[in-house]
Image (cartoon, rainbow, N blue to C red; front, side):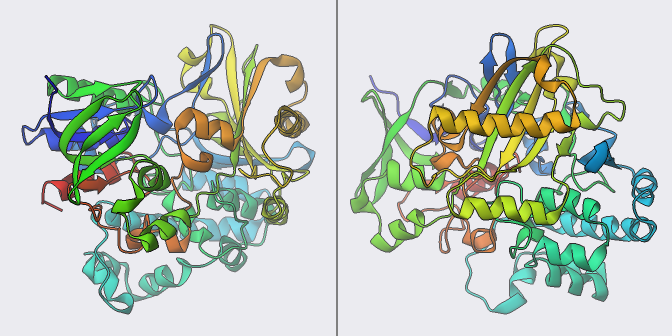
Length: 518
């Protein structure tokens, strides 16, 4: 006899697991389906050599307080590095930006007295602005039927803005659409300092620092960072996927069924309403509600028969800018990085100027990997020693810009080898003899990330955080309220508001919508 579920959740990443937890509170029979053999979504690690594993990113994300309380993860132990981020300059000069403002001022003073004076006010203001986004990320983006900046009071953020005071409120509204280059030129004089900040602002964007909206991207990844820090959100001591594992334990207690290795091939629709899902092997699972947390293109264009969707909606979904542009090069090494400043627990940028960042982005416009791509690295085993055998370590480099579509065609083994050589050369320039310590190495280009993580174009953001793809316009205008044009179908992945690296945020808000509470 076929089991009928009240709701089926597609995807067992943080959003899917949190959505299941929210729905299970109402005593509903819930099934979570995950195509991979492991849960965790973007937080799960990749085994790239025997005994060696790495996450794709050093940023483990931010958990909204309401989500942490719902999933009982607020008691998970977290740690934070002493250094927020580092940029390596010429002649092995390293600019460390500690999380503590006073410590950062001391380091900045060595390159610019004026910038050291300006730093506390800049960081304080950016922290306030990121806090506004944090408030916004805990509430549903409304259906837009309003004019101008009436949007902000409608979201319940007006009072928060007014508390900023007139000057900061105006500044917040001014800088949100700005390029990070313009903001930094207004704020600082030293290019090494500018490049450290700009590197955070172009994260997973196929845009350079001169592009509009990169300031928003910068603030998005500041949400939840320690006061005084521009990056370096705390990480879970238990591992990159500790949050997902903790939610899974809660689901087991709630008798929620989680199936891995279960790829959804199609969402069944009957009379304009959801009827359940069909798995890749042909198994049909009936359900009254389906909530997808996979990327919007895979959901709407891959799982739903075209006859149930408006052609204009399908075109809008097709036009979402996914543009996976970040490759990962994972290294197994036979000794730890000599890291007296403890900077490699966080992100270390090897790009010394904003103009170099812009040149790297320019190459991607033409389907090329730049001669000198932007490389950031960290060592996950300095956080989680269990990711490598004893006395061995992992170093992971994130390489931008590595466009999903190369002008020469599909990615080849030679393309991957060329990218790896560029990354290794960049690292060896600041870490002498690095190449001689490498035991194994593996490249994950965007097509590889697409295959392993099931996300279109290898875009772990599920859609870039550009100004036309945030808030109510995420995934597309008209679908920002999580409820889809098919009765019983909801969308709550990173492609929805509030976006990537907000653990469980979209899943929680979508589940509330499904329950009629949001």
